[in-house]
Length: 293
Image (cartoon, rainbow, N blue to C red; front, side, top):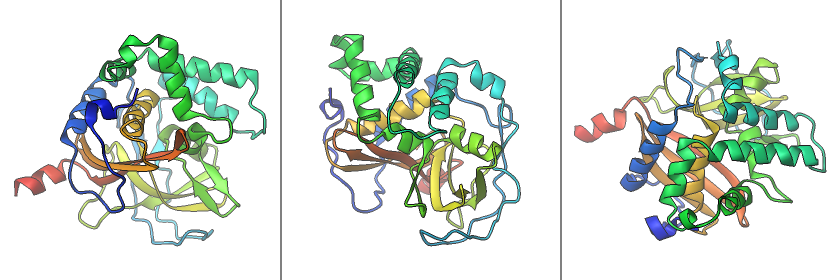
């Protein structure tokens, strides 16, 4: 079921890759156009970018705040909770509010319901179309592949990527989802400190990928990143494609999606997902204009 059958082998990267993967960009933009559950900036939510965050080292607990207001506001929670994938996703997030060693039967059922909802979306149906072998497999096999990638007994890629974790009380690892960011910010567990970007490439309120700095439960993440406004199924589809491109521990590709150029980074934990995140390189079509010049 590996996507290397379709896309070919991509070596592990040790440096920033500047070559854009055009075939991947085409596929991801098709997924983007099919993401009908994506929230619309300025209508379904408001972003307040504010100031550029300062440089801080890992492990620092106190940083200058360059953003007096929340990053996300006016979020249409009613709309979120009326979209099956978002509502089931938010139910899963609630499960991680209280950390327990054992996963309950109810939580496993909720994960199954979430994956079922995700697989019913247009985004995931086209993903299965691209996976040439998966077409001939029964639906349960596709679900099993997703489960294998996202969760495992000893380490949860879902928790790491979408929920976030703290390591030894000094480091935030993972935490790459905008809905979790909003909910934690709303409940005053998280404080947005400002954006991270190059001097000539400032983000704005309609960007769908942001690099940012924040503190969570008193621990600072010097640089984080996340898609903004996108549906859970879009993020899962994109990261699944990159994950299945090869069996290397780390894979990084550069793609153009909508008006943004970004790196997509996926790191394995055995046969499961260790972490996955986007990193904004340029927005508002600047990379297109620079190439034209």
